[in-house]
Length: 116
Image (tube, rainbow, N blue to C red; front, side):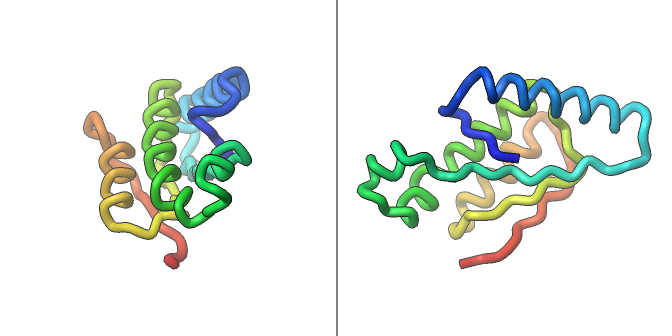
C-alpha cells in the first residue's frame, strides 16, 4: 500500500479506515493472515528539495516517513500479522522500523526484501 504521512490527509484517512476494518475483520473472524507491504515513494516536491537525489530521499527522508506511517496506521487499528518493508539500506533505519512496528507490545513478523 502506498501511504504518505505528509501527503493527502483525506486519502490517508480513507485508506487507514479501510485497512483498519479489514484488520479487525481478519483478526476476529478469519484464519487468514493479514500481510501488509508499506510503500512510501518519493514525491516530486520531496525530490526537488533534495535536488533530485533519490538516494538522499531513501536515506534521509523515507525511514522517518515509514515510522510515521506505521504509527499512524496503528492508530487507525491497522494490525498486520506480517509486514514487508523495503527501501532501507542502514541497519539503524531497520531497527527504527522494527521498534515502531512492535511498539506497545505488538509482535508480528517483519520481512525485509532486497538490499542495495
